[in-house]
Length: 303
Image (cartoon, rainbow, N blue to C red; front, top):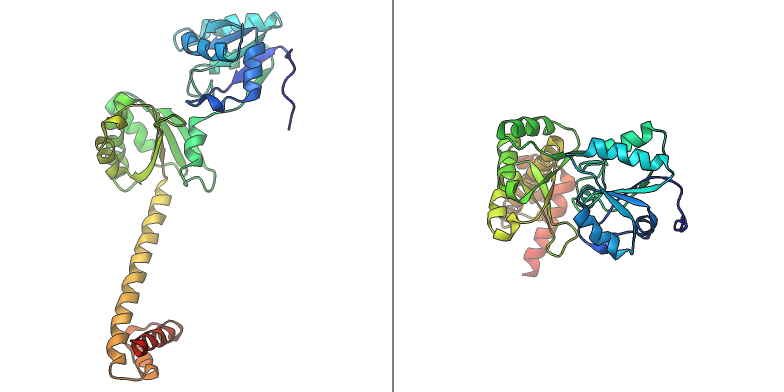
């Protein structure tokens, strides 16, 4: 394991992941970088000031949001030219992916400055780790869907053809419409894992078919509050699940029918003859029928 950074850091742009809800998830390395940085580029300076106060940082702040990112990027490049240590953060999680920051990173790289990632909390990885879907590691992060219904549905239809898991984010005031759209566009059988308020006090993670998601949401008014991360299973996984369920149901039906037939035959015949006759009537192999016949015969004799 690498030691914690020294109290003086190499000049550069540090892309720092911050907690998505639980402050205990802030890494020691992230704390040290934020404490030592000369400047911090923040999506919302009011939100990030609380974090800087927590780690006893005296860094000066620059607002970096969707409306000023280009100008903020040039200002940050100027600070890097002066040899400053600049940390880039979003309100929660890893910046420069779904949140502002990518233009800042691109500008810093274009100017020849070092960009140092300080990894940590991620709502996407937190949800996937608890989903049980990511067995092959394949997923696509699509961020927020378009706000207009037509564009949203077209985007969903495109994402729904992905061979891997698709992860999206959604806000509280749009979650109901989005869940309804997923069921309508991708089908009610499409499997979802919903993560609400991840790592926070009222965290909920639930797996269910898309057709049941609106009912689950409406069952508790609190579920319309808080930010969501949603994992959408690929079509192949849904189809495989359906085949597995069908195979299990068929196996149960065969086993029940065989037991009924053998019970009737054993009432009139010895086990060996009952087994041979059941094999001819059902077409099932001897290795399945005969052991089951002996089990039922033994049960009958013990009663």
